[in-house]
Image (cartoon, rainbow, N blue to C red; front, side, top):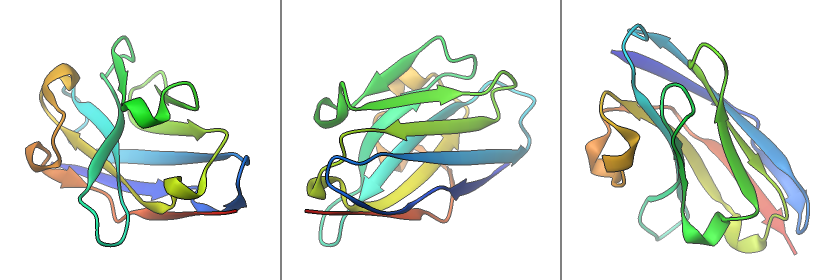
Length: 125
């Protein structure tokens, strides 16, 4: 099992930036995909970005391409999300997720067994 703890959320004005972090612990000896999801009130949870264990594979939702960057540390156990040019539409609870499968096939929230508690991001206009 993997335990995940997110940090770094907060409130910013439109155009601002935030960096989220997700620290993994537990059974981290195997390669595992880590991803960021977000969920706004009344909306479904949607994938924002993901990274393979070594960082060689990354993917992004179209709505964040060019604005957000996902990365993992050298050990592969901390996932980051650098968010730039934030928009009010980015306001949501952001969750870190992980599981033992290739990130290229991990597009749906239902596929992930391990989740963090979430960190709130609020962007005001």
